Picture (cartoon, helix red, strand yellow):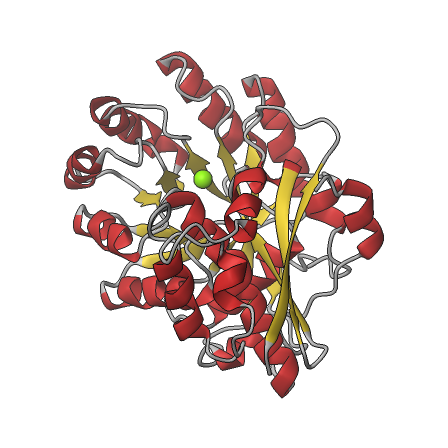
Length: 371
Ligand code: MG
């Protein structure tokens, strides 16, 4: 089998704003083969930038668009093709958007492989340690504590066993930080788990203080309290014995950086399959974290493509039982795939169909396609 074409499809809602909702746009990748099998992947990045990285013409040997690195190649040879894309793009790549763009093609290769052999991707990744996860509702803090409490009540009433609030106005003042988390806990009651995503808003001293102040709200974890470059801050925070787990990782694209964050003492490693160059590297990070007895979870704030790929990834590692389940209501998050990934009694299940187990709604693709 040979790869014949790579399509990078930019989808965007009509009114994208600065609210920290990553599901307002996306880059869908389709990899075509001479066998007629088409694989689907997704990139979480600036869709405009990632599309250019995939489609760029050759400038010279180590400065090529990713599509040129894989066209004519065998889609089964996934590790070799990751290497070809990495080496072919090192003049502009090695980190950030180039690695994120590789994810879209790599995930599509796994989809092709699964469809070709008639097996779900989790089996090809080594088999499922579990097939159901606690789907924690992932949502942004409201503009006020009152709005946050209303969202918490609504999500509790929908049957979620765990809820995470993040970003929004967190970090503006001590009083507001405490009021937001207090409102979230009040709305959820004591029986629902609560995670807080601070949204990289504090320095280390403030994060250490907030972690202690948040103790009374019984958080499952405190996520991204610090800037992703603040390695020393993460070490100081983790060394301060906070009364909850510390989580981070969604800004990272490099396997070595996850190791470095775990060296700092991080408890929860958050891997986005559409940002770390795909499923192979996600699995590598997952197993590195398993060896260190850390919790590994997905980061997922995109479409059903990311959800499916993340489910296959998490199924294939032993050290998790949570699944980040974005509850934004935009059309790309809710309608791009025909599969809607329902949460039943608080749990989400891994697809069993060949490949990723998803089918795109092409009418949605056409409606929101901008390039
Ligand atoms: Mg986050």
